[in-house]
Length: 350
Ligand SMILES: Nc1nc2c(ncn2[C@@H]2O[C@H](COP(=O)(O)OP(=O)(O)OP(=O)(O)O)[C@@H](O)[C@H]2O)c(=O)[nH]1
Ligand SMILES: [Mg+2]
Image: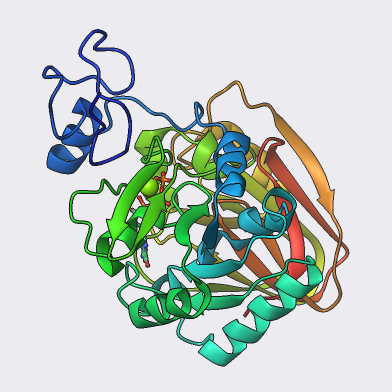
C-alpha cells in the first residue's frame, strides 16, 4: 500500500470521510494533503486523533539519535513532561525553533542561558541545544553539524509537539520538498522514513497537548492566535485594579497594582483590551464573541483561578497563546477562562 508523501498516512480509496482517502489508490498525496498544499484549507482535523505515547514508544525502540523540536513561542508546553522519561538512554538534541518570532531585544546569549537554565531546572538531559529560526533556514548548518557530531552511525528521529516545526526542518534543512507543512496542529499523520545519504531520517506526528490553546481553539481561529511574524511587545503601565482581555479567551485581573508594568507577548492578530476591573464584567457580558473574539466553544466552562505572584518580575504563560511579563507591586492576579487551558507563572524570559 502506498503512503502519502506529505503526511505519511496509508492511502486508501474506500472511505472519503476517513484518513488517507484519495480517489486514486496510487496517488502521491492523500486528499487532505493535496488540499492543504494547493488551497491551504483543512478537509478534516487530525489534531485529537494522534496518540503521543505510541509515537514515543516507537522512537524509543529505534537505534537512533533524537532531534527534539521545541517551539520557542510555546516553550512551557514542551517542557511540561520530561522527554527523558519517554526516551530514557537516548541521545537527544533540542532544536528550538521560531527564534524569529521572539523580540530582538532578547539576545542570543540571554536566550541560550535561559534555555540551559530551564532544561537544568527540569532535570532534562540533552547532548546539546540548537536555536533556529525563519523556518529552520537560520541555524540550518548548526543542525547538520550537531547530527554529524552525535549520530554515530545511527538513524535520526525528529519528535516534538504538534506544530513545533518538525516537518519544516525536513523541508528546509534536508530539502524534502514534498512534505506537508501547515499551521494546523496534526499535519503529519504517521512515521515517514526518508533516506539521507547513509542513514534514515524519520519525521513523526506531533504530540498532542490537550491543555494547549492551539488544540482547544477552532481551526478557523488559529490564525488570530498563532503569530507568524516577530512579536511586538505591548506595554501597559498599571495602577489600582486593571483587567486585560485577550480576545474572548482569557481575562486577567491585576488587583491593587502599584506602578506595575505589564508587557504582552502575543500574536498581533489577537485583540488585547484593557479596562478597569470594575467595568470588566459588563464588558464581557456585552462584548464576548463580538468585540472580544475569538472565543472557545461554549462547552469550555469559564472558571476563575488565582495565580501565585513570583517576586518582582515574572511571566504569566498561557499555553499556546503567549505570555505577559509582570513587574512591580501588586496584590493579586485572577485569571478567568476555560480551565482546560494551562496557565502558569515562570521566571521572566525577557
Ligand atoms: N515563524 C516561524 N514559523 C515556523 C518556523 N518553523 C515552522 N514554522 C511554522 O509552524 C507551523 C507548523 O510547522 P510544521 O513544520 O508543519 O510543524 P510540525 O511540527 O511538523 O507539525 P505536525 O506535523 O502537526 O506535528 C507552520 O505554519 C510553519 O510555517 C519558524 O522557524 N518560524
Ligand atoms: Mg509535521
